[in-house]
View 1 (tube, rainbow, N blue to C red):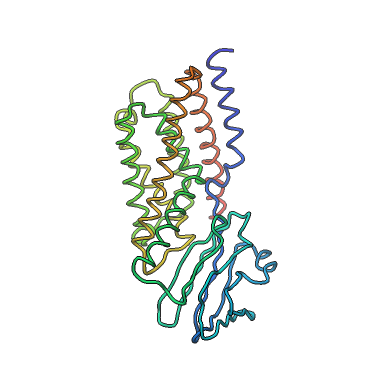
View 2 (cartoon, rainbow, N blue to C red):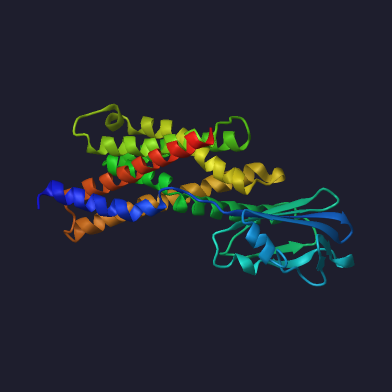
Length: 324
């Protein structure tokens, strides 16, 4: 089998492995639970989820601490108030992210993201202030950013394609820095409402950005993308930032801690992104050290990434046209 045939064969296999995830590049299943204090110790409860069946199946959206008692949409915690640990056992084994919003009569508020990895939430009778309020927000939104980049396969494909395109380490650092700067700008601007663009065309362009970089990886001749990959990374990073923001807005942002939440989410994205790049470089070094690395392997991976991205382009264009 020739090197070209081996490259195409492995590319087809990798494409097949990636394809089942194509239609939903970074799916996000969300639910929300809001508690609003009407009078001392008594809260109005509102639970909402994307699945109506889930809402019907759950007798209660949470296991509330004693002495709280849930009666329909009313939660009565008595003179002690809402204090203790809220448990969400129904989250275990799911990919659902639950946004919990607790508001007290004095206007103080707690807004947290709860997932299956940590299906509990500690509440201390009111909204914490200072560092005590900041720490859980930083931890929650940093984790959310890491989760998004690791499950956002289109963003991962773009980062991997850049890693394959740029061979020199110093140039790779500049390219990833440009990508980081660009998506940080549009992530913040979109989340804060300074710019607004329909998500469907943004998702199409994100997929196209992967196709473009993959084409450049295969192009033997010199091009602008090869001479200045940082410029291409910055340009498409602006689009990827809007994609990050759309996911963040679906989850929600704490009104009183917007800068902290945005910074933490972006930090999580960067940590996840750097982890993927480090893993890719380490794998390449390992293959080279073990003398398992072959010239056709890079081409096969490029074909696989480009093929999946091309599928996403078609799929997302169809979805976009159907929405009009």
